[in-house]
Image (cartoon, rainbow, N blue to C red):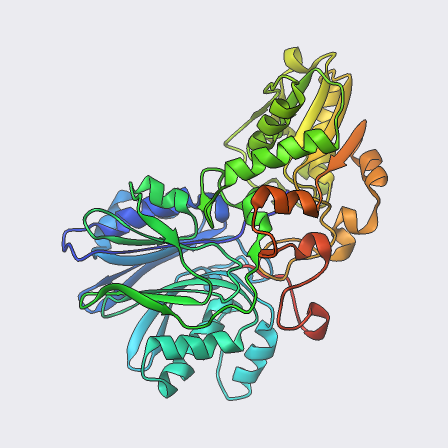
Length: 469
């Protein structure tokens, strides 16, 4: 398993009774899977910005009393999972910054590969940073750009030309104007929608707009900047035309919810197709096809359909056990996995199981799951994986560790099979990904190809680190 990325959400309404803070709460709840470390909401009201943010889940940070105090009709929010950005309140978002005689609040999802280069450049000009978040860096770049350019589109173009990496940004000003920007390569998902009453929504994923009852939405174009204002409503322009579009393939495979639509593709359908391809690429005789809950269910459905082997739920998930990876030792992490997943002995015992998983990163979690099934009496465990072997770190916002921590970067498939204790092990490949997703030539697959679609390769950035949000 890998750690989640970040999710952003924004809403604008001309209805003075519109409860933006409550809408943000529901939107962020729909994006909670993208970040469980911290969250925040910023509302514009009476020419100012009111911000509440803290460490923890959305339901832990916000209650009815807090939301009622955050009156306003325009708001943005974020759920965050940091990697090296630091899991502290100083890096929680949104950020409020004063730029060119106005105050802005920013929420961010992504990773800036040349963060350290740009940060040192700005510090050399005498600027001081109060956090290690990319969003503060982008805010400073935008402040400089607004001093030179006369509109947000020209300013954001100037900022984008300096950035190398993945980013979707949602921001608002103290006057009640709401903005979004998506990087010119379209790494990170971002959608815009409008309901029947004219309320405008922005979200990292369409599932959050579905929760609002919004059916009219589209992807924000790579390099596009959009603005919602009292005077013009929703408008904008594509400030940079992409030289190459590179949507993150891992969003389709794991990060985004199965019910989200990205670039016209329903994620559950992509995952079912990969399951079908796995059944053709790596057939096996078995009694049941079984998913690792919850993200592998679509893969298992596709595998079962293509193979003719019955689909069976054999692992029950305890939804009150959260981030097992925070445990300080491997022994405690394994115990946490056992508390989180319980095999159904009456289903598993004496059976040959095809276990479907979305990906293998370090291999430790899957090793524990295979062991759980063995202990429950499984006769055979055949592992099938929807993502090809992850052989390289991600510098575009996914929390993949260093080469030495990636099991597929240092071990063959056969060695991995022995380490996790499976009878057989089969992965999909790059060709299968392109067939299932259907965006041939428009995907970032750096983590499985070691070919990075950045302006510079990671080795050319001396201080490049894996970061998120």
